[in-house]
Length: 568
Image (cartoon, rainbow, N blue to C red; front, top):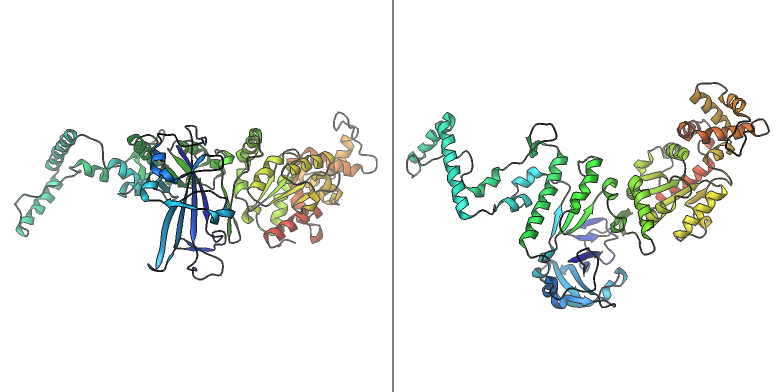
């Protein structure tokens, strides 16, 4: 068995591309492709065992050892590998782009790829067993059944019957056709008129026969149909079902084709690779999750592009390759697992991917801790930019507490997704956040403008109170509870009661109203988070619509992402 790893290199121009013509990249402001530009694709292949783990070398009786021969090289640890370079370049003699493939003697990281040495030519026979099949997002079983080059027709074109069986079935088909025609007045009427062909064309009289069904088995596939019934419903042809079912049927047909093909070839002599685009198309979330297991059952190596957090959450995070746009550049990154324990990876998969996998597709991510922020910050953001944060590609994510930032930070920092923190500023919260930042290489958060703490000692609720929004809070409390003077009654009823086992409420001494407001907001975060944000952003005084720290955060995001500040 083998494993393939790809590096796509085009002398830096792949990262600078704004347009693609004939497979050659154009940099911004270029109107034609420079003839000296070369596209280079390097592929690294290593042997693996039955469990998919990389091994030292190809077995002595390996099909691949015989296939590639001198094309197999050894790295510094004497481990076998095969490196294949594909180059497309302009040929002045032929006046067109030509493609050449060569084996490489060594394998370098992308910064040193030009130092690689050529080992010999690669012919079609060397790469034919590494067939790459592409199934794009427009797949439809109805089109597959009428496409003579489809996987469906490759399977059913040869039914695998003996000659005796073919003759027997075709005789039955002939008898059935005759019986149908003789029983149908309409078909007899049409056949009678068609038999007058002999009057114009040189042929025998009564030489026309109508076959309502194909008479030869080789033609049966052209009229074949697939019927399917959902639970408790009528049976319909797949062509009349929804696009989700028809799309899934294409994928399952391909799986049938590959398992059948691997059955007919010697084990280990073919390594199929599937490029699957957006398998989630037209499927609901539960079906998307279930689909992942069916994809895993397809033989060979699977390369899946997806915008679905439901599918992404089913895969191991170490297998991800994250693509993101940065201006005209396309940046590809992966999770650096070398410094992560298995438990660290499980936390990322369990705490992030299982619930907040959508952050993979974000233009930027804002992280915070509590429930109040989760309701209030999206409202502040929408009023600030006059657009939903999602419309700007910004994900606002509550991590569930000041001690739970690390899995999120590891993911976004590894994948190069711009990220921001708005954290509580209590001593314990600051310590926990600092500890998480140190584990991703940030020793001094004060030097990073994307990390903000609220005012010293404050959580989100107390920050809004201390920021001078007491009047807004009192009005909001009266409105939400449909009771004038709600704060005053609360202070009267709760004074002297236990706030916790160790704290007695004191609302009569100086600052009692401030303490009461903080207790109310903290005690019912989900009830007051959104109404409070709405009340603040609806103030007539524009200078008070956004608390200082929130304004500072949004200004930083706007500067970094070049966003228009509209609501200020």
